[in-house]
Image 1 (cartoon, rainbow, N blue to C red):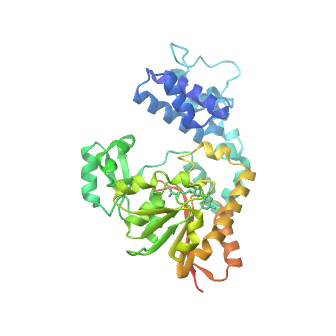
Image 2 (image 1 turned 60 degrees about the vertical axis):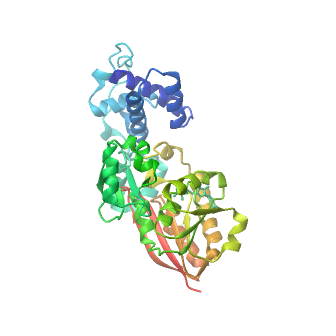
Image 3 (image 1 turned 135 degrees about the vertical axis):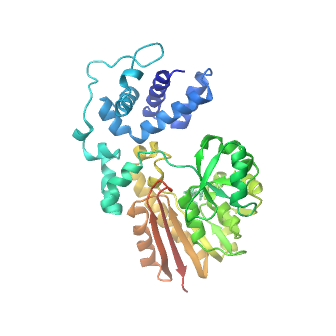
Length: 387
Ligand SMILES: C[S@@+](CC[C@H](N)C(=O)[O-])C[C@H]1O[C@@H](n2cnc3c(N)ncnc32)[C@H](O)[C@@H]1O
């Protein structure tokens, strides 16, 4: 496919997304309908679509319409490639028409310039103050790919060699033991020997940082209350903890057993009814469901789909899950609360509300990592149960 035909394909996929389909479904569906497209074409179309979703508002402004065509026209205007891509030749998008005139981004409002829904600006400003615009700017860019070296199986230097053998190059991540950032061939990671034999896991650097900061020691009993696919449970098991995993929806944990097998660790999965009988734990991790605002570089459709009602609903779930976790923590043990959001309503506000009602817990550490080149946005608090 020509570069312009890839832009035309991205327009088609974006239109499906704007009609309500998910990005994954739209991209897969397009691939099925266009079997002639090669892997490089698909990857390029995917990149166009994800970048267009990250910058949906500003590109629509530049392109003059909210449609797939408007957004991709804006993207090409931002890249200075309109004449080349909107040529009307062969499978390229048709020529720019009357009514599709360029608009200056400086004339757009702040929400449009920052590619954030208007109602969310106070949430960014409240949590990030003077850094708010910078963080919103970061969310318009592509996030890095990070790996966690499975310390239970190998060491970092050996893993770097094994990855290089499969054409994947990486660099060490400063200050995070066992973390690597992929610098070349990130799409090949899941096919490498290192991945298939459990020497590495895909995990963002901020999550790795948080799990290390727990200071786990071998044999400590840990409950991962909201385990989902088990990324953090695996990280804690690799650090030597004895991990029990739970999720309100056990189907979310189906991949955990094969992942644990591959990593050479044992993680018990349990249903809700069993939790009280297994308590107390030394550490209970609440990796709470959240807006994901710190990870919107990776899931850009989510920033446009979030509604005030859904955010309130999430706040209630976050409060409830903390209440559920508290009695499972042993005296002297740790309750750890994490979100991949930067908003106060999902972070500090929830912890303040919890400690006001639960005098037997005190905050021992609290941190908010902003989305940056070296990782996603991540909020992490450790509370100690005192009595
Ligand atoms: C942020 S995700 C977990 C991601 C996972 N810990 C990881 O590292 O890959 C949040 C999970 O919490 C689960 N969840 C929601 N409400 C819950 C509840 N009341 N109790 C336990 N899990 C819950 C969701 O099903 C979802 O899988």
